[in-house]
Image 1: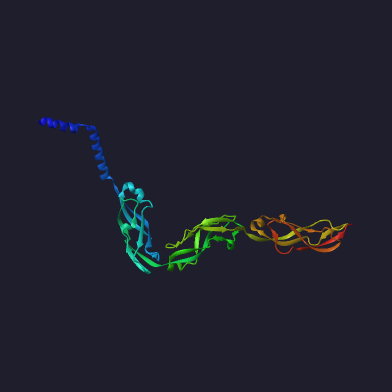
Image 2 (image 1 turned 90 degrees about the vertical axis):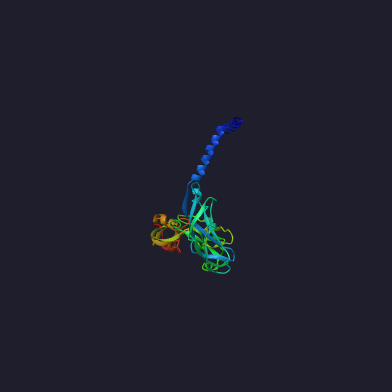
Length: 317
């Protein structure tokens, strides 16, 4: 009877022994993995955001804007530790009037990307804040123009268009009271030769925010810069046919004058490229004083009144 009882038990142990052996090895492997997974500890500097519980009060300033936090986690979570998923946020409660306050930062204020990450240290532990009354103020928007256009071009600042040209900003009373305007993101002008339009955001100091998401439409007019240039002793030529059997003789052969127009155009214009003439068509014999005429590029013009030249219409021999 004893041998009969042992045999079925031995058969139960040896039955499917291959599968049981594999299961044993897997169990041992998983145990070693769980026990032996290495943990790492890192120190991260993370931004600290502080808000008030009541909308009527705002954070005007805080003693620190970031915290040094020591974190411990399995090595497999290193990517999480170095990502932006780790943040610090604290909501100040129980404050009903403006003043200076302090509070302790605890592990619940640290927002982690995984439940396997542990906070083992925070520095500084105590943070000071200045709480002020929340107000809303309407401020004009000033475009932040950076750099200069290409040589010979300029921005007509009085014609720059901003839409909307003012926005409502919410924030601490003492902070908003110091502001007369808000600026946009930088708008690059370097090397530009044409007017352009651009959508930009406004830049606000910490603790300030617009009452709504605002995109600013800015139009920047760029024109070629106008200049002046003197042209001395330019030869005057007679054109046309005077009265019958007569010819024109100039008493004033050269004149000096100033031209105005785009700087680049005047720069390229040579003295030989300026044609000055006097029209003697059908002039009778005798002395005359007549204003000269010019052939100039379309964008260039004479500064002031046309000079006059003296000439004599004489009888042909």
